[in-house]
Structures are given as C-alpha cells and as structure tokens.
Amino acid sequence: MRVEPAVPPEVLAAIRAPLARKAQAAQVPIVQPLALALDLAGEALRARLFVVQAEGGEEMCLRPDFTLGVARHHLASGDASGRYVYEGAAFRASAGGESAEEFLQVGVEVYSSGGATAGRDVEIVGQAWAASVAGGRKDLTLWLGDVGLFGAFIDSLGLPQGLGARLRRAAGRPRMMQAELSRAGRAPAPAGGGQLADVLSGLPERQAATVIEELWSLAGVTPVGGRGPGEIAGRLVRRAEAARAVALTQAQADAIRGFLAVSDAPAKALAKVRKLGGGSAGLEAALNSWDERLAALAAVVPPKATRFAPALGHAFDYYDGLTFEVRSAALGEARPVAVGGRYDGLLVRLGGPRNGRAVGCMVRPWRAFSGGAA
Image (cartoon, rainbow, N blue to C red; front, side, top):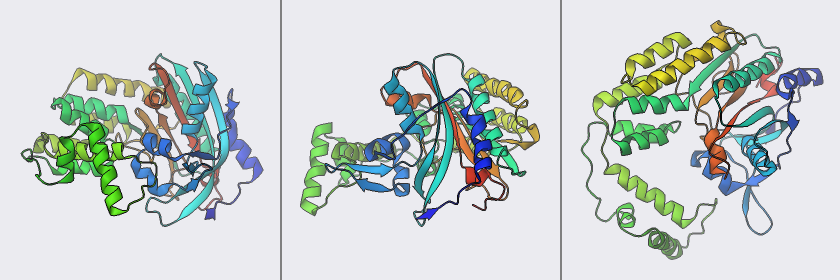
C-alpha cells in the first residue's frame, strides 16, 4: 500500500486553519460497516474499499472517507445543528483497483435544521478554497456542479414519471446513464421469457429472495460483501423492469447529453443549460439560485478561477445538491486537491430528521502542498 508523504507541520496548520474555525473535533472509527458504506455510497465504491473481517464475522472496511462517520456522530449527539472538523488517515484503492493508498484528509461538515442552503454552500466552498490555497499552489481552479440541477433539468423535459425517476437515480452513475441514453428511440422490450430477472419480477419479494438463496446453494456460492438475497433479487427485478419501460426519444437523449457535456465559465454554462432545458419554472428557479450563489462566491473565490460543470460528481453518490472540486493544473482532473458538496438526503437515510441539512468538504494536504507531487 502506498502511503502519502507527510506535509510540513507549518503547511498542515495553515491548511487546517480555515476549516477548524468554530468547529468541534469529531472522532471517526477507522473501521466502518461495509454494508452501510455500500448502501449509502453506492455499489461502484466496492472495488475501492479495503475489506476486513471483524470479530463475529461481520465484514467491515477501513474508512474510505469521513463524511458517513461524522454524519453518524452528529445524529448520535441528538443536536439539531453542529459543525465538526476532522483529520486523519483514509484508505482507498484507485478506480480500477490497480493501486491502493493511505492518505491524510482534513475536512469540515456542517449540519443544521431546515432553512435556506445557498449561504452555507458558499461558506463551505470558500473554506475549501482557502484551505487549498494555503498549501501554496498557484494553479488552482474551482469546479462547481449540482446534482439537484440535473433533477430540475430532467423535470423540465416533461418525461413520464417512471422514466424521470430512473434518470434521477442515474445521476453520477455513468453506466446507468449510458444505458438509458443508448435505449433512446427504442420500443419497450417484451419479457425475456426464461431470464432470471423476468422470473423473479413475477414473484413476491420474499419468494424472489428464496430463489436466489437456492441458486447460491446449488452452485456452492458463498456470498460476500454484505449484499443479501433480497437486495440482489430487487436489483435484478429493477433491471428487467427498466428494459420493459418507456425509453427517451432521441431529442430528449440529445438534450441530456448536451447537459452532461456542459463545462464552461459559470455564466456561459448556465446559459447553455437554460437553452437545453424545457423552460420550466422549477429549472428557472434552480438557475436563478445559482446566479445568487455565484455572485456571493465572487467575494471569496476569483471568478476567473471558477468553472461550472453541472454534472460534476464524486466517487460517493450520496450527494444530492451542490458538488465541487478544487483542482490543480499540475495534478490533473483525476487528483483533486479538495472535494465537497451537499448531502441532505444522507441524514434521512441514516434515520435523521427530514428537515436536516448537511454540507461539507475535505482537503488532501499533500495535494494542496506546493511541494507535493501526488
């Protein structure tokens, strides 16, 4: 496993300072529940996790990041609001699983109860930018995106309810999105007859899970990774239902491809989204909100250093609003200095209140350090 070099203490202190203001330290266990991480962060993350066996046989993983752990820490406190700073090692493999590394993360997560979110979004982006700049690099660019804007864009196209819901679920999941786009213009497929997914789709949920368990037993398969037969059966059924569902028209697919390709200076990017969208009130409200955010951001991040790519996503798919990255020209797109965003929905999925608000960011000090090469 590759371990990042240490950052000089004075540089680390400068990077930490903007994030630690008015925040209390949060301690996150280095070992996290594997099943929970996969359920909340997405199945695509599996190949990037370090799986370990806990006492009692439960599969766990070394923490791939701190957000999930800090969110659980906050909910356990019972407080309606909180601001937490963290610092420690995280463990992750590359997207293809070819390499593995241990690296230092410093970050801040902010929780509140209801209310507007734009001001807090700007605050967190500003903190991430200040922490990144403190490392000494002069080649930084702030990239902004918005998972919620994609939802408003999809709604503006006037799609059937089921199709729109599938596309919103596909946000940030390239394979799922490509599957929907590639089906554009096709008529719904008939049931596959003997295919397992079609068989399961006609059974009650518990019976479908039993079929999967029997197949495992006959094949001598021992399941790993925390996925139960019920969830696997559900995924197969959803796949079969998607194949038989209404598809996009070519014009709708082209509009979505255009949206996903937008990447420009913020004002130009928003203009492109307006032109591609269906002109709904919801989309216009979302775009107007971004006009306000950008005006506020101009006071903390140089406008010339800001880009907007609305489809910007992260390795973890629990983000449901603002997303952002601070990138270094020397390190490239694949190795961002800082990442963050809004994840209100994660609190609900963890059993928190429906009006909970959550936004945060993390910085990798070695990447922020001007002497760092990776």
